[in-house]
Image (cartoon, rainbow, N blue to C red; front, side, top):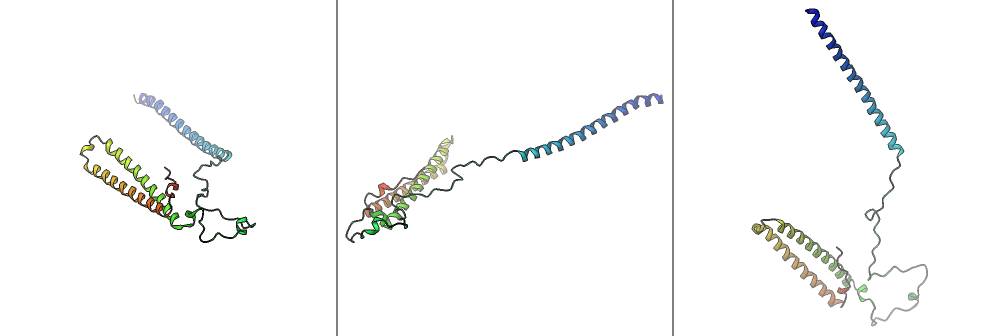
Amino acid sequence: MRYRVIALTLPLALSLSGLLATQVAAQDSQDTSVADAARRAQEQKKITPKPAKLITNDNLPAAPKTDATATPAPDTSTPSASEATPAPAAGAAQPDNAAANPDVAALKRQIADQQKEVDLLLRLHSLDQDAFLSNPDHAKDLQGKAKLEAQQEELHAKVAALAAVKAKLDSIAPGESAKVAPAKP
């Protein structure tokens, strides 16, 4: 009986050891294949050309802005015809009064800044109003309603301040407030 048990367990033990040896050999070949794949990937990386540089508006340098009231710098290499003629008399009117008056330029900058603020407030108010109205229970949201009303009051105050600055510019230089470019969205 003892020989019978040994005879039955011996083939089982031999088959298990063979299976274990097969797995160890497969694992070694897998390790070498992973290493080979890493080497090939590294070589491929060295061979592939680097992508071309993509030029977009974001990575281009900003172009110098031109202003209608700004005068270009004179060319000093050759004398111009305006240098040869005498300066206008003190009583003569200048053709572009806005460029000569620093107050007008400052008011134009202030108007442009305030127009940007008004535009931003309008956008913010629109987004907040959409968020408020998308709430199915917005009728009970008193805090959201109060926030929208506060934004509306602030918007009206900014528009009134902008109108006051435009009126001040019109009093100094009539027609100049119409020349101020509206804020770009």
